[in-house]
Length: 194
Length: 366
Image (spheres, rainbow over the protein chains, first blue to last red):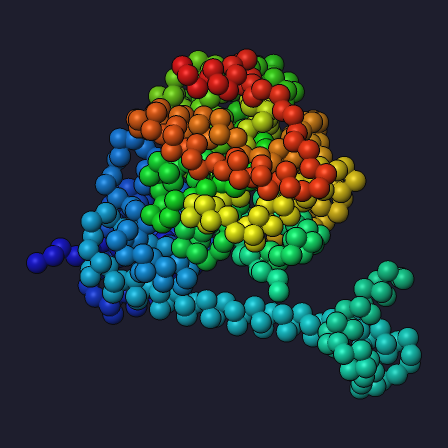
């Protein structure tokens, strides 16, 4: 009978941490704890003494975890090699999903795999959400620029909104460019001339 | 057909050669396209190179050496094929330490490492808590060298710890750190947020310390394909361009972009011009050659020094470490590529000397 694996999740966003926690508990039984205060990361890891630490690849605090692994000689803890050295494929999949796992040396990959799988699924989902959010933001920004360009045209030529937009679109089509590019050029030029 | 090379970088001043090469078209002039990918930690960059997410990355000069010594990273062995930047580190202190140092008469001249170090040691209450971005870095090595040379016994009286640069200013402000040693813009960020004051540039400890290298997998460096050689040429041109004073304004604007450093161009200009604002009161100091992009060839002696310092501190075999370290710095390869560039001239460099008068070769044989 194995004792429960101790997993620490390093994540400052509580909603996200909760979701990772949830998907892990579906993958098996683990003793989980979450570190959200990056300034206390090292203390928390030393106190919890986990078998595995999961952290976002984009988290700058990863470098502080590296320091825990090998910086202090003699080694304070027999931990933390990047994923399981014996399974490069698992490591690659994790990195592609944007998750880093620090694992106690010697933990066998059949115990590790469900955890990494669950984390990878969750991280992929978050990445998808991030991409969608970025696309939405960009669309909003573009709307603002186009609105400003329309406003400039309406004022300069004394035309209505619909005509201003039609003019923008016609110009874009004539030049084989996007409406947003024409709008941006117009707004920049107006900024220079004002 | 143009080959695209994916290159990892961290949002730092010394990513400049990569950003400039991509933005100014030095890559396309060499028949390649650099696709830059921003990362947020050194360990992430190392793993991205190891597992092939990027072809190459900006790396700390000690990183290929540390990897060769088995210090972190479970992926492939790494090699440094070029030195992207020399120096550019800055040491800053908390407001409390700065106040004590001023009271004791220290003038923050930024050009006297001996006086600065002694004043810092005198101002400490208990072991000096100093943050570096990564355990195996020139930042850490410069600190150990500087403080030990001034008689501070390490590790008993100094606690050098790894803190992500974005958290350093907060650490100083909260009184959890006495000092930081970090690359720009993070020193200036600490000044701007009122968390601390600048004490010394890394160049005052060792003018010529390799700071960032272009790191690739060792097997790629061995194969040395044309796209990699093209990247080495393109980045050399970028470094030459950056070394021209006329380029500075443009370089600051490029680096300030939201996809790169995303900080005001004025902050970037401080490092590139060497005109550092050292305290919240707006006092400034000029540091010539604060960061240098023109010393491009990797030197075996530098790798050997890093390897020996790491080995000595961590209790590894020093001869083996030296040999392993030297193998990671591909000096000959870089020289061959560069000498084929029309108009390339090898830069004559003065012998590497530390602030206490030790020369590199001598300093390593103690």
